[in-house]
Length: 314
Image 1 (tube, one colour):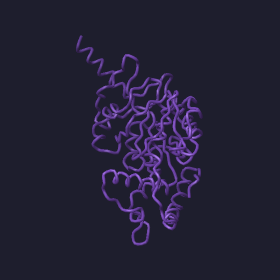
Image 2 (cartoon, one colour):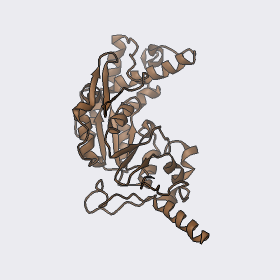
Image 3 (spheres, rainbow, N blue to C red):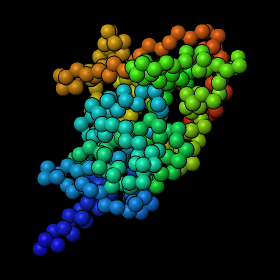
Image 4 (cartoon, rainbow, N blue to C red):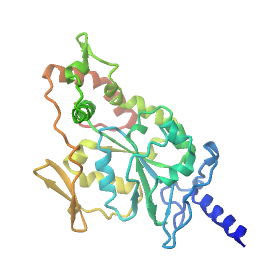
């Protein structure tokens, strides 16, 4: 009898690698076959804690992933999406597909990082580094080619300044010196094109890599600048893309004058993003800012052509 019970438990754990929602998968294309998780492409191991809890909750592999971009507003997007009762979000950035020490542990480890969720809920994780990592799209596709992806982008120049600001503050907190924005951005009188933050803002380059594995209709691009100014219309679009019922309302958002950005109101409880979000950028020489805008002019045009829409960027 003990052997039979152990076998049943292991079978239940393995079945958690297959997404299941009542009535099929509403996020899949009509007529498409049900996606199969390709666990064998990793370590072909059963998840350590995949058994269903007595209340019906279990850990599920993500139904959608926020793939980036770094300093584009991914945390804000995840927090806003978490207002929806049918969303279960992973608390931390998992870095499964881009960090080898995590990826080699297989889907069982990845599943163990997911939150407990009810069968009807969508599981979401966000790791902004996925967007700019060349090896990630193929790995995500290998897990589930029918996945819906969220990509939040903002003005590339502003994103570069936010990227610099985060690194600067990290050094300040550790009482370590860090060069000025001018020293980082300029070498020999020209923009330092080897600066990683510049590369992260070349959106068309990274998106082309994703489009080799996922069609554009499976990638919803959130306008990060609009999400900051007026979050409700942008989050409505996300709800529609994920085939979620419209549960998030305008009343869930209120502008905090002290912080200078929108905060969330959920069931009478107010919450704002961490103080590390929305930091003021350093003062930048207008000539250097103009160089930055010029540098991104052509890459932005290529990105607009790629996605068939424009954004209000410099």
